[in-house]
Length: 614
Image 1: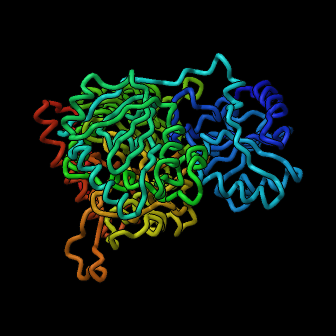
Image 2: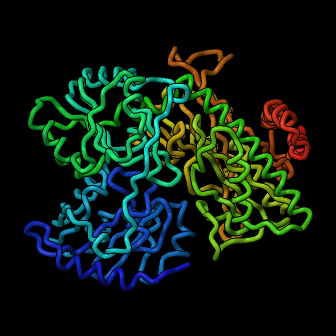
């Protein structure tokens, strides 16, 4: 599980000694972010530089290499995984703990005055760059852009090529709104903010705005491109060879003309706008420092893009697609769990990997299926305590009747994206396992049924999902909810629910879709998580309306039963029992007609058993 990084670090340090950042001489430290040039959460293999240099392949983390140290910062989702994957060259910095200094603070304390810290400016967002720069400057050090990526030089010919896969058009029957109508809304916001142009670098925003999808990053239906939006032009910087054959027709159907430019020309195009226009240019603080620095400070308008917020609030067609895709997905999940329970009871060997493959085969049989939305977390026993675990040959465990099985999975459909977690035991869970499961479920039921004012920040609601765990001194090291894209990224901003503030959260609004996923993890023993996708909807029968601010609540659209044998009923209130029974009745009424119509009596019998009222 650990691979040696000794030679990679030695070669990197040689390059650091030869780097010439302006008049600073060599660099004393080099930062290796997880990001690609678009600040994507997940990367194609070409951009997995942090994984290459450190051996840690979790989706979040930042490596820092000095002349004599190598450190990795990552959050609570990945502590266990990082400890297992980092070799002896590395020190794990547990981000999120009060005792762990920030990257900038650690560098400021440990580097000599006058030191230069290098980083590829394309791979660090402006928002992340500035606090590191401030902390270094206070210690008389500096953060400097290194245009030539040093990790790429170390990787050399073995580095996978940048992906450039074909793009597909998303028809109006699935997208719901033309590009022209989206542009009209954005154009008004440009005028209101008195800006000349909007620079869009986030790949999911570009795909959504243009009603296009791609496959340049595994599980994420996006393609590498940049978009510049003005009042009278749409400029798309993209490899033209990957454009769909029906691209001209697509523009006609969407009432727009899109100008195609080379992908690498984005810097030149921003510079042209700076020199030919006079007003400000809108760029998100989450865009790279490289792109941001091309715009003079006095000309920058830095806020979350209007595309990001528009994308998060689903239109009527997207809503219908979300609901329907989750119904089809629910059928696949029930078929898998019914099959799996039967296999385990009959003593047929199923392991994490073969189970994951079987689940994928059930999903692949469904209408509009396009692929998985992330690597399935199929985790038995102690592997379930690794929050973002995914099975590999060296970690693969048998699924059995003596350990908890956690399955977090999702799919991409033409009309929606799914993400669901269920935790099951096929034998007799311990009393503590049942208590932990019940407290997680209590938090999920509480969060999913809460009424809240419109546009409240997601962070405000986080405690509702944790209280039942906190009451007995338990907790979980990840967020409670993330946005979900429509046939797009399974993790979508700008809103979210967690202990940490989401800096761009515009407040929760009707027809946003987020996850509801509290959990608990006993290190080295088991993991528990129960996750649904919920739609934010107007609350009815609320005595008051938050002074006309508007009352909202959640509607669960995931359709899959929650295992009741894991529940300690005495810990549930009457209201919670009613909520669970009502949900299970809805699952039965939604899925049983489909299973009956398909003649799947086996899964139907399993479902009937699983939704019995408690």
